[in-house]
Picture 1 (cartoon, helix red, strand yellow):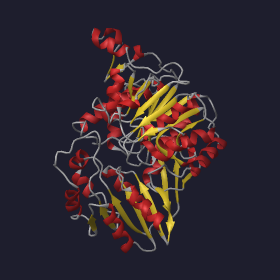
Picture 2: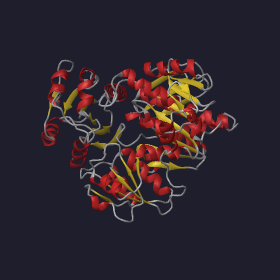
Picture 3: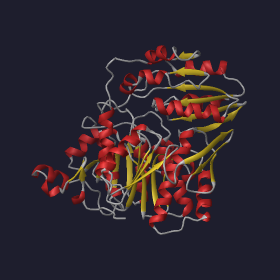
Picture 4: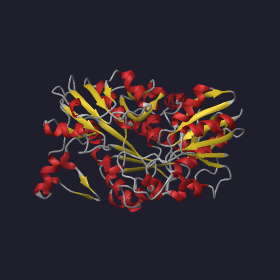
Length: 506
């Protein structure tokens, strides 16, 4: 398969355009696309917002390539603190201009921070090169055959699964996931070689358009990030642009069970007949149709139409089966392009890799069990992901009382999807709601509160409680949790601390 490394073949929207024909200012802007130095060895890179999931993962990748990495972020503790400390990366827990000293040669910053940040201001005034994280990730993708994993939800787990299977079957790949992965020794990256690059790519502000994919996995499209996207059509247009970056002969591996993913594939089939469309899921045609699946306590098993064997997972949820089918498709397609036989030995190796997968940090993560109470944590922050995850847990652990503590992330998302959020907890026996967790990238306009979500949710669930302080939640849990319960913290906020505190205390 052709690996595009030249920007002159770039596509824009639904049309293929030679960039030399663009208006002069746009041509210059495109040709001056920011790039990392050819070698990163001993290059001092400072990362603003280094505790972010993508930023911390990228810091790992930069270290692997020989860079000297420092960083800064807020004082609040995240799970990435542990990763950064294990890596030995020094970072400050506040932002200050004097963090950008004469030794810093490049500043990479999270999209959550802009010109108002004192360190970004210092870099600009000192003429130090600046890159957004996604620009730097995009440049890495041009150096090899790269696979982008995208979707409103499912992309983190699918990337981790693809990386785990790739390592098992011996693909020469490096992998970047926006979460810590136990099968990657608790880190967010894995290195098996430089022939391929498997990376999680994000649609927010169309950042994935900086990435240059040779293949794409598309898990889902529905409204999200409505602080940036106007509506569903706007987010769909971003995914269409992303798919259109595929080179001739590239693969779009898409979920046939997701309405948005199917719509995107159907639109692109009319415009790009030169790429391969590979569906996966229950409704799929072809080798990656899920013919049967079974979830019993402790194991999920499924079979794909094109392969005469079962595959199994130790973690729950129909969505995990879908993510696994996508990851298997990516790895098998890559092996086929290498002209390697898809024989029983390869399938057995894939199966063993899949069975070794134990999730990712904050994705159905099991903290442990104490006094008969199972403690878990999950990053689900979109109504569909919440509903799917809780339904999967209820089926996987049918004899446990399911208690969810949820903290909504961003006021804009909560306001736009308030009704959907309120209906997403149907599988839970007890729902605990926290105040909304604000984002550094938005300003609260007073339109929605955690209490609004509480009042809406009460209409659909019998046992719903609302807390304004974590200490109140923990007190309630001490008094009400009992043997046989499954207690899960859920959301992209910091309420994971509740489950961790309770587990450690007990």
